[in-house]
Image 1 (cartoon, rainbow, N blue to C red):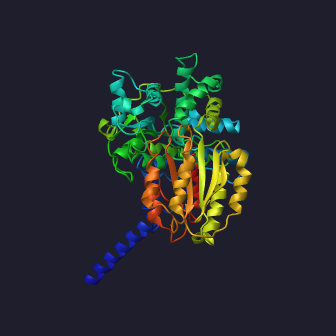
Image 2 (tube, rainbow, N blue to C red):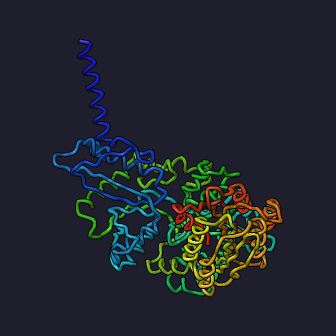
Image 3 (cartoon, helix red, strand yellow):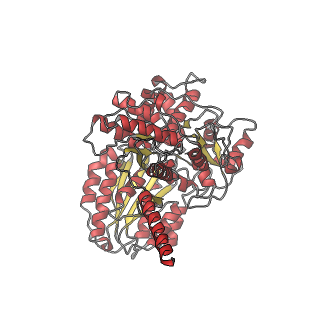
Length: 586
């Protein structure tokens, strides 16, 4: 009898294990259980904006598990006889990059960047309209692309800064007008009772990649048009307005607030969390501001960030679920994608979306925590929502960015000492050439090298003019001699400091193993030289890229800390992503 009971117990355990393996695939991927695909499933692929990464993998897993267990994930009922299960795969990617990949799949399918999702969820429907415009067809039906999570674009500003602006403008709604007043004030923040740095530091991302940046740039054009044209009550941007030199100059003036750019909001969430000394305000989705105030970033903010909903207006990001009208989507996949959309709009998933700082798209889920004033946001805002311009106007705003954005002076500081010989200098040389290949032509670029001797190989000049000289100089670099790293940093800072009134981003990209052996100046003297210009209108950013397993990370970290940047790895396997991060600063 006992033997029989034991056998039954073992059989039950084995049955449960087999069932769990069928549902969970026997493992996990990045902490998310894997569910095996049923043999007859309709497959749906989704690409979603990075903001959905904290919860979408689990939502996909739960959806797939329901079908694997024979349940409909929306109704909870058993599948009907003959009803095929659905299996969803997903990944996150920046909206602008995906948009171009989908456009390429339609008009240039042989391109290296091609995306063919069944479902696409960019942060905002601007991208759907641009995809239609760029392909010349209704690739996406905007009326049949429902919102799944709502987030207004805000200016995340330190509470002390916003309170100081409000104190000087009692009773007024605050917007771009007031931020520019700080910029134009000869004493800057000092006139607002804030000691220390007087100038304004602003940041936003790349409007060719980032939804937040594209919406922000459109918002800047709206604000500039109202203050710099003959239409102060403008309701909708037109091509004439975007191409008006006065409006473009006004946007250029706003962009002069920029400390530096970044490709993705992911980096800026970490940058601004360092505190008011790093940035005064940055364009974010409301959910990203909540994320920072909840203490989820690497840095613990020294004070509270608050959402400024500009009085001139802002945009809602609605995270639509859109199905391409393309030959890679079958009718069965289209129907299956709509089932997954319905699931994401269901109350349980919408409650998870709310928990991640978004306002629910399902009206049955009321707005609540964390959309609360204690976390720096206002559930009653935004008061003014901007009209989305026609796609041709959005495209014109995007293409204008290279003309209205803040330009940069970039000095490549290249270690050619003997310790960089072999693989190190080869990798650094390849990285420098790849970096130059990504820079816009209107930036000014120079090359300085150092061993025990510091040499200005190519003077700072328009990249359009000195491109060939820079490429030739980098290709000819050889490693020899001792390393005067600290002296070289001081010399590079001095070179970029020649024009203290410069209206340009100023940056040094250091490629080195950090092993100083020959400097006359000390580490402290170098740090002091960096700190001496940190409070200026355009502080010099130094981005160290470390080479070799024996790199002196302590020295390179000291440089990065003094400049409020980070040491980047020069390892070949990571250099492409590193270059994208560094290039996006400018």
